[in-house]
Amino acid sequence: MALWGGRFSTGPDQAFKQFNDSLPFDYQLVEQDIVGSIAWAGALKQVEVLSNEEYERIVNGLNALLGDALQSPQDIAQSGYEDIHSYVEAKLIDKVGDLGKKLHTGRSRNDQVATDFRLWSRQTAQQVVEAITQLKDEFIALAERELGTILPGYTHLQRAQPVLFSHWCLAYVEMLNRDLSRLQDAIERLNECPLGCGALAGTAYPVDREKLAHELGFSRATRNSLDAVSDRDFVVELLSCASISMMHLSRLAEDMIFYNSGESGFIELSDNVTSGSSLMPQKKNPDALELIRGKTGRVFGAFSAMMMTLKALPLAYNKDMQEDKEGLFDALPTWIASLHMAQACIKGLKVNGEATLAAAKGGHANATELADYLVAKNIPFREGHHIVGQLVQHAISQGKNLEELTLEEFQGVCPQIDHDVYPRLEIAACIAARQALGGTSLPQVTEAIKSAKSFSSP
Image 1 (cartoon, rainbow, N blue to C red):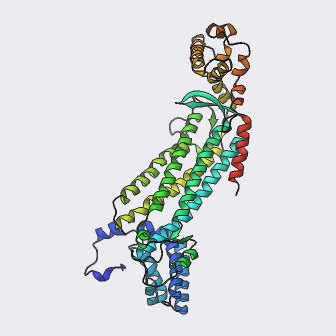
Image 2 (cartoon, rainbow, N blue to C red):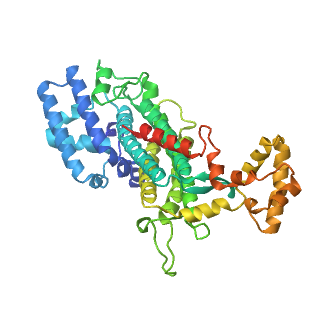
Image 3 (tube, helix red, strand yellow):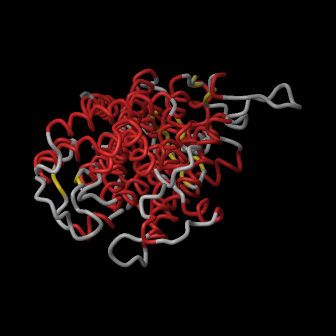
């Protein structure tokens, strides 16, 4: 039976029922709906709508129902009720009789679902926090293992300057720190309780909404009933956080796919995150990383869809808002799974330090160091930049790296260059010169690892 049938002389036809019903996906809120109902029963007892004995019977019935539901929650989706609220109410009436019909006193499905969804979002977001932290820790462990390994840094996918492999790891730690900060801010904002706001105008019963909020683990009760039942900012924020973080994971995936390619050979992914080809027996495909990259699009899609759904809705509740759940129900688990898969990829990673070093030495990646050397010889940087460009052009024509040029070749372009240029062009010197905060020198990266470990500690 629907919760709203008294106004209608006939019921909905089957096509509308299928179009309208949300139970096939909001069954996932069964635990939150029952937990919120237990708290609401307590509020009704405090305002003497329920006696102590009635309260006990309802709470016992709800707890029994929770035990049943958690055994096979997916079976609820096929039970034919309109939504999770009507399912819980009907099953409670089965257990405690007509007493169960009193539970909805002073409550609307509008404040009920807003509360349920915030409870689910808060719980699931905490799982994301744990997953981000675990991936950060894996990056830090890899940075420690590979401290001293040299990697070519890239701009425009062209070799640019050498960096420590650990510096690359810590770049993603910085991204994950921002992801974590954004998510924690979003959790703080969503942690307000709409229960007791009714359909839109508030409840007519003098319930203590602050106490009710605290019983459900919220930091406070919402302040405006119109806003409380129609606000889905928390959904948008979580989808935004998920989208930004998935963008970071997709960039990571792209880096690692490139590093893992036969053309680079910088890393080797472990067998447990790769697959083979049905035709070519030699293949070892980076499927886990490609799936992370691919799943980023569906998370972006959920964010875009939610924004479009909300953009022109008047106050207060509108049925359009039923579209808030499926996107988030998909996006957050996808985000969690992608974080765990990225962690698995990092955990089993093997780095080919010889290949990364050879690549870092190629491509004239020490050209900037040569320009800085000329600055030390009192040559303005812009002029030095031009001189080094000429030397690079000469080295390419001779099939040499810059450090392989003779002193005569150097001085043929710039007489100020002397024997002391050669130590400056060594790859280790290029790394060591980056001593400023945030640079890739060994002392800076070592300190950054210490800082990252301290930041990651509980």
